[in-house]
Length: 306
Image (cartoon, rainbow, N blue to C red):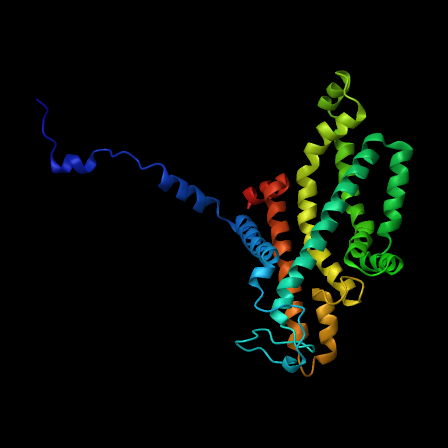
């Protein structure tokens, strides 16, 4: 017969430790530091901006291109929270519609620039010699010009329009991806597993895309996420000069250009599109910083030593 346990002994009796959900919560709270906060905020706001752009037709309270001169220059009010412009169009609806143009342009520039620059960088770093010299001299020449000035010159030659704007910015943006990809390829081409890949019969194309590319994807992702914010600013700058999407398409840069003439009478025409550009650029910069901190091993080491 077992001896009954006293109250004092019961208090000292070892209890089983709780696991499962409390442990998960503890790990989440432990991992929630400044780095993860930046990434969390960047992802949250980026999803919100993309959601607005995708569902713009549903979220717009008014037709963004419908003109009604009887409603022009109405200040912000419950009916028109961002006011109306010189043609009586709702500024809030035009900003929502403009998010589709600005984000689609920025994403196309990033995708095309990253693909072109990565391929050229891999070829240059892998083969070296004259191939590397030719490509890198082209990169040096392009980088000698300020991005916005070079894109402005290309846009002037190609003409106005969103597609020409994408081509103009891609002509200069691919260089940064090419330099990063070339540097990584030079570091990898003398690795032992690359020599083994050559020994088992892999040709140059297979080695570049089967062994090099997976090792530089994280670097390209970091660079792309950091570039989105600056590309949004480039697109808005060129649209401000009339080289982007043409009326009646509500481009943010073009909206600021239209509103600058009415700053004394209707400042909301330029202020709210400017805030949209600033918020989008800041959001994607936060996302880029968070992804860089997450994927860059050197950042992991610096965080651990703090």
